Amino acid sequence: MDSVESLSEVHEDDDHARTGTVWTATAHIITAVIGAGVLALPWSVAQLGWVIGPLVLLAFAWVTYYTAILLCDCYRCPDKTTGRRNSNYMEAVSAILGGKQKLLCGVAQQANLWGAMIGYTITTATSMMAVKKSNCLHKHGHKANCRMSGNSYMIIFGLVEVILAQLPNLEKVTVLSVIAAIMSFAYSLIGLGLCIAKVAGDGNLKGTLTGVGVGSNGVTAATKTWNAFQALGNIAFAYTFAPLLVEIQDTLRSPPPENQSMKKATLYGIGATSVFYVTLGCIGYAAFGNSSPGNFLTGFGFYEPYWLVDIGNICIVIHLVGAYQVFGQPVFALLEKWVASTWPRSSISSKLYKINLPGTKTCVQFTLARLTIRTFIVMLMTVVAMILPFFNAIMGLLGAIIFWPLTVRFPVSMYIAREKIKMGTFEWYRLQILSMVTLVVSLLAAVGSVAGLLDSLKHSAPFKSYY
Image (cartoon, rainbow, N blue to C red; front, side):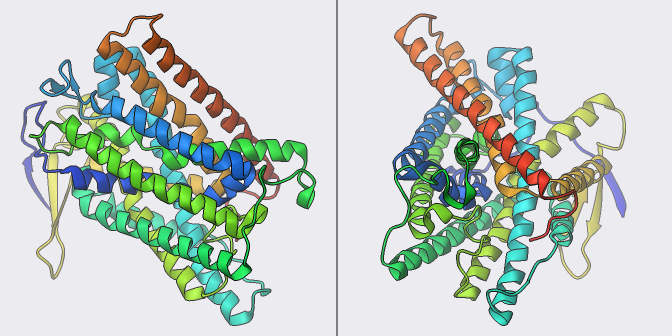
C-alpha cells in the first residue's frame, strides 16, 4: 500500500466532472425505483382488491411524477437553470427553506436510505435462499422440508457490498446501475411471464372486488384493516426515489440545463416503472387471487419451471447489489463530509491510498475514512437485517415513514417558496390538499406496518431468519 498526494482543492460549485445524460439518469431512476418493492405488489393489490388496488397504484405513480417534476427545478437556485448547484437533497432544502428544514429533511432522507439498505439485504438473502429452496423442492418434491437460515446469505451479501462501497461516488456506479436496471426488467418480465402462464393454465382470473375477505383463512376484521394499510406502505415504498433525485441530477452534464434533462429522465423512469407496477400487480393478483404471496418470486406460488424461478431470483440479487450502492453512496458521502469538516487537517480523509490489483491494470483508491466508515455502515445494516428479517412489514414501514415528507411535503414546500405562491390562492390550496391527503395515507400505512411487524415478532426471534 503506497500513500500518494492529498486530494486537491477544487471549486465548491464544481467539485467533480459531470458526464451523465438523460439515459444514465433514467437508468439510475429505474434502478432506484424498481427494487424490492415490486415483489410485494400482487400481495398489496390482494389486500385492496380489484377496485381500489389498481387505482392506488396509478395514484402513487401520478403523485410521484408530479412532485418529482417540482423537485427537478430545485437543483439550482435562485435561478433554476444558472443558479448555484445543490449537490444533494438536503442542500436544496437548506437553500430554499432554511437550515431548520434541512435538519428535518436529513432525518427523513437518512431513514429512507438506511432503511432501503436494510430492506435490500433482507430481500437479497430471501432470493438467494429461494434459489436453493427451489432446487431442493424440485429434487425432493414440493412437500419436502427445505427450510434454511438466511443469516449466511446476508453475511455474503454484506461482504460484497463492503467491497463495492469503496467506489468513490454515485457516478462511479453508473455501470452497476445500468446492469441493475437491465436485471430489474429481466425479473419483472420473468415474473410477469410466470403470472400470465398461471392465469392461462388456470383458465380464469382470480381475486375479488374488495380483496382478501374477513373470515377467509382466519383473517379477522383487524387483520384485514392492518394489511390494507400495510399495502399502502408497500406501494409507497415501491415508488419512492425522491431522496435520490437531486443526487442523480448532480451527475448530469450541462448544457442542456440539468432540470430539463432530469424532467425527461423522470418521465421515462417513472413511466416505465408504472407500466411494470400496474401490470405486475394486477396480473399477479389475477394469477394468485387472495392467496397472493408476500413476495411473488420467493413465496413459491411458482414451483415450475424451477430453473426460470431461479433465474428470476438471481436477477433480483444482481439488481439489488447495484441498487444498494445507489442508496448507500449518499449515506457514505454525508458521513465522510462530516468527518472531513470535523477534522479538516487530519490525513484520515485527505490522504489517498492506492492498491494495484494483482494480475490487472485496475487500481483501487481509498482514504482511511472511506474504508472505515463504509465498512462499518454495511456491517451495521447487515446486523440489523439479521435481527429484523421481515420483508413485507419492513417495506411497508419504510414506505410509510418516508413517502410523505420526502416525496410530497418538501417538494411542495420548496415549489411554493420558489414561485412565491401566496397563502389562500387556488394554487396554494391545491398543493396543501395534496400534501394533507398523502400525509393521512402515510400515517395509516405506518399503523398497519407497525401492526404487521409486531405480529411477525411474535413468531420469530432475532437472528432466526428461517425460510
